[in-house]
Length: 400
Image 1 (cartoon, rainbow, N blue to C red):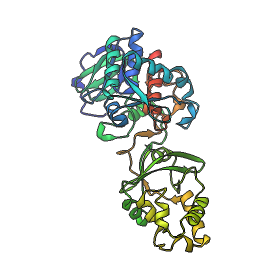
Image 2 (cartoon, rainbow, N blue to C red; image 1 turned 180 degrees about the vertical axis):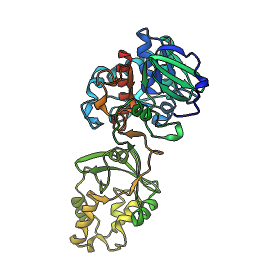
Image 3 (spheres, rainbow, N blue to C red; image 1 turned 90 degrees about the horizontal axis):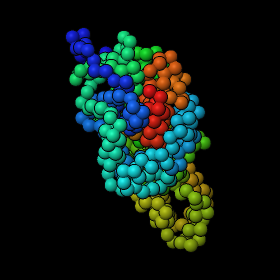
Image 4 (cartoon, helix red, strand yellow; image 1 turned 90 degrees about the vertical axis):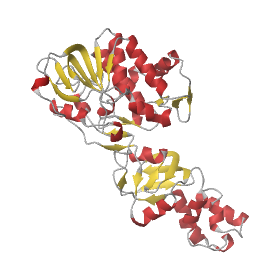
């Protein structure tokens, strides 16, 4: 199915109570909880080491949860599905585990918790918990075939394994260079589960034509902005890139954008019109670009001022009014995104209608579980997706 499987490889498999596919955040948490309950657990991953995405998260410091985790900060076709798991395993529960292992951390902004040191501490903590719970973690095992003659049977390039319970924690399609595959979706289809449409989430936006030239000329410029799509807005940093827009606010809004315009308020918390009129009175001999540079990066100020070379005193209000509107709501229309290669998460996935919200078990396939990013539950930027991984993994670990 996914590799060079041959019946010749079908030797008697090693038997476990639970097999977890994927040694990421959700998979390791599930394995820990199941192992603590006395289950014989095997974790399989094709990567050369466990937790590869954990290691690169948060700039290498792992934004491991968010203190503000609430269900309405998650996207799903069924926005209520995540409530049960998030209520049963909370940020405080994971923080307690971090404290137990003596890992120093800090709150950065907006409830985001980061390691003071390295994300490696989180991976080491999870592996230590796995070891203490008797979990068998095996990397460099590529899955070739999954079947269910009676128990679940997993064929890999390193041998065959079987278990009464199979947990799929192989993630979505984001960051394929880190080894992401569509395995979770293949397995869901194989066992008759539905999928919602998948697309990149928390991803930079791209532009074309003259707008791209403008963006490319501002590459590297960053500023505090409010970015909006419809009624959804986020206030954080915006970063201009050679292909378009990135930065936390843009990544956040990208999960809600499908097509059409995006609005940028470049002076959040200010009345742009009042600011321009006040500066016209206070600095009548100043140029427009110089005035804008008081509150905006110089390169952006120059672009917004354009070819206007008149002194502030000579600028009529009919010229300042549309500029004020642009400062408060610069409307730009992306032509796409950077795709899964740069996406931090995958939107969509295994349809929650086919899963138990309490256990993550497939409704019509007893013993089969899907957790983490593979499921149609996607959080905001800032530790929310890790909290979903911990919570969904914990719930499955309680049930297997």
